[in-house]
Amino acid sequence: MASPAKLAHVVLRTGQVKEMTDWYVQVLEGRVAFANDMLAFMTYDDEHHRVAFIGTGASERPGDMHTGLHHVAFTYASLEDLIGTYQRLKSVAVEPFWCVNHGPTMSMYYQDPDGNQIELQIDSFETDSETQAFFESDAFITNPIGVDFDPEELITRYESGEPFADLVKRP
Image (tube, rainbow, N blue to C red):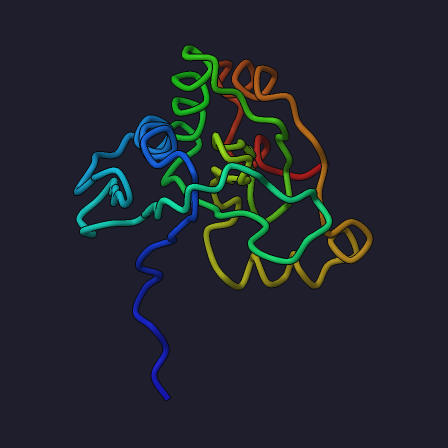
């Protein structure tokens, strides 16, 4: 059996194709590959499209208690990149609704114009074996969700030169 080489893209249904496209381009520092009134593709790397939007005409969003996609996560290469993205977005009034140290990741959750949850994260461990060891630890078994953090406090600690391992260590 062959596993996929990569996750290519996510497609979201929306009643506001332009607004959603603009939001994702801003948040992910991407570009529009194609757009019309009913369909848009955007990317932020060498893939032809990473996020696409299909116009449905619908504008309603079901409540929290429904089946379907919970969130989409995007991983940054460094803590510096995650912090820089947070600061860039905050300067244009786009702020996370939840910041959490999951243990394996440091994550900031945002909501797009349709209310979909988008996770921007970094990996806390350098290797898969370190991540797996954390999944098997009492700390994770006791609390698999994580511990909230204040992004402004994280920035202060980062700018003071605190080591990466200390910054991402889950309390």
